[in-house]
Figure (cartoon, rainbow, N blue to C red):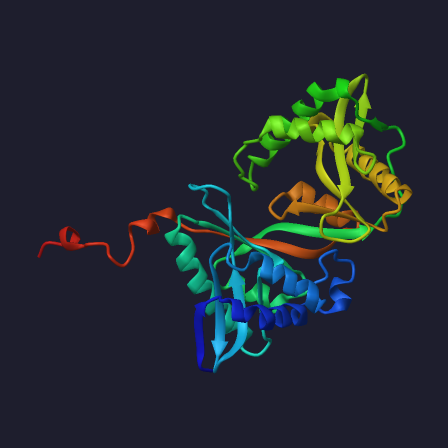
Length: 326
């Protein structure tokens, strides 16, 4: 294969749209609001990101066989770079080598710009792409799962549920902080950082938006759990669970199951056919809960964290004073 990786240009938009649509057949993406199987939709998406961030194309004897583009966080100094599901695709033949070459070129550009955390969204159906990315140092970070918006067979009947009110704000923020602290524990090991002001604004929106739900569990006048839900930005007719937390003292008592049952009933009443959720693969509690309650993975976010010392410990590093003395 005479494979060459070059900067992505405008002339690649049309063949890239065809590659993207071909990689996402209708059967696998039927519920997607971003119907990547539709060439026109794929063309609009490619044109939208074209020229907005680093992008590369794999060409074989003048024919586009793959592409990859990244979206940078706004402003300077952010290390996180995202490759969305509509920002990469390739032909099937030689796919492993195409992805390896594309990422090698794109990663070089990203690290040169200070981007050391790379995230790529992949369909769960694309096992070959996932394997290729694993071989490049990526690992599963987030899992997206879907299930029918039908009631659960077993629920915890004694759990008291109601919609949250403005007077619950202090308890809601308390649960938010507890969730962040839980995520900081092993094996999640995520920094316990949260923009509480932004989260509070989101709660206030849920209080008044009929298409959003903020459901709480209550015991003796104190909130023991909460679960948010609203329209999914990607999948049609799907309500997605947002923040969900059960306080430590109430875990394993059916509170989470009761909250999910309440969300599913609300989703069905709202006319949603499907319920979705996203969880960290390293979160043992969320992973077991989501899979155990019927959520089937349909997509993954893979992440690779680069050692930032590569910004100075690279090919130009002078070892003159590091040679062992004879």
